[in-house]
Length: 392
Image (cartoon, rainbow, N blue to C red):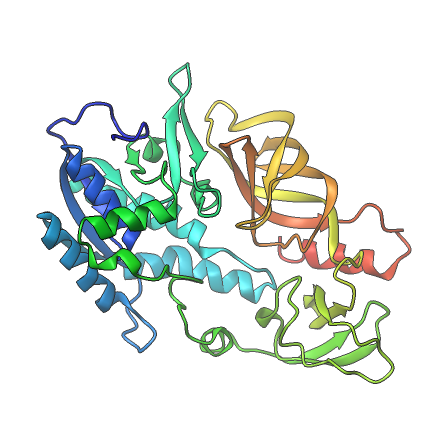
């Protein structure tokens, strides 16, 4: 059956599918071909380090075999230089500033739905398609809407919220109406060898390699003190960039004499004096935020862009988080977000993405976080305000 997210009638115009070598893009190409579309594939590589952790060569061969079986031409292109300039350089700057970025969001905006989309159009594509678990439809007024994928566990609209509406209007998500189990079943029925290929995990250019070793190749790490909420030094960190809010493992301070046996969590950073703050309660006020500021705001409804608006909706402050009810006060490209209930580990550098039911409204980068329920005399409120404003 033709998904409602696809044009209702195939025509002679070309659709180019971004082929990753995985099962999702393979089934996307299969569905389009079987629906009668003129389909070609394109394999894009963004990283040029040919080490043991890079799977690009293997992924290309998987994509080639899929296209061969389906009878589809396959193009190959490298955007490694554009990726390093537009995504990786930003990734390093954010970590250097003590924040935790999400490069996959930028990769979608700048590369997959930016330079790669333009390249596909130069190849003659009228539509592009990807294996994302998301949907696009039109409301009654003809406005394009980005919707969550039908499989809530795999929904990827979070990663697509920064894509330009004009790009989304020419994009097809053929598997957006399916769940993962059904995607694998269809791949197996079609004889596609990737039907049971594991999903890729983590940051694409890091893969399975040790994160600390990778990041240390590019950023000099300066060890410094780990302090508790009262300012007592309880250990030494290996470099602020190697830690993120809410992190439990890798602190090396378990079993400290005079402290409870409960685990320690990263609660804050003080870049100006290279200090890491850790607490033992995962619900500690230093880890909780009931409000935060967003910058670099991008709305998918162009009528909202730049306007001063105020409304209630839901927000995700990280991928695969449950929707959090909130109130938004936005103007130009920034917003203040007030949560109905405090949330744990709201992390500067990550993206806050807004939803109205299944519709993705847009989002932006978390710049500062607050816990208004803390007394202003508490030591912790100074940590939160100082770190969050640093470099923003």
